[in-house]
Image (tube, rainbow, N blue to C red; front, top):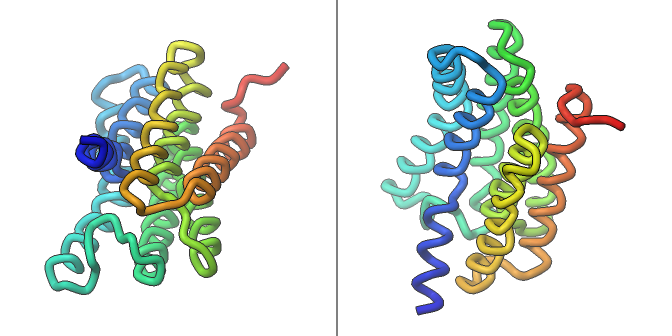
Length: 197
């Protein structure tokens, strides 16, 4: 039963489901027009998330990856590189099109996270599930305030599931969470999105 719950939790709170939800929530918070919020969300998803997802699905089907969540550390390198290229394109497109600062900050935080996690991955496996959930929770709390504090419970939940499934150690989920939160706070602060004083 524990393993089933852990597997379900891990599958629901995976990066490819968490990211679009976060982007939509941030868009609706930062843009008054619903149509514009959806437009910017779709652009960011199409540029930075969808290509990575499609390539991973292709590689899994052609048996070049063991699974969509890539539990083997060495298999992650090429995906990090692709994610880095997509995130860079997203930042350029958003800057060029004059996207809302919140979404530009989200793109920059995503690119920063890819670079940092790719460097860590050269020597050590780190939990991307935990990182994505933590980054999302951090961004939501920064923008929505105390009303979003309830989402904090998702962090230990996803961390537990990754440990329970034996995909990561406690140190790996803790490092993923701490690095992700730090990256979001620093980038959002630099964009003036973190309340000061």
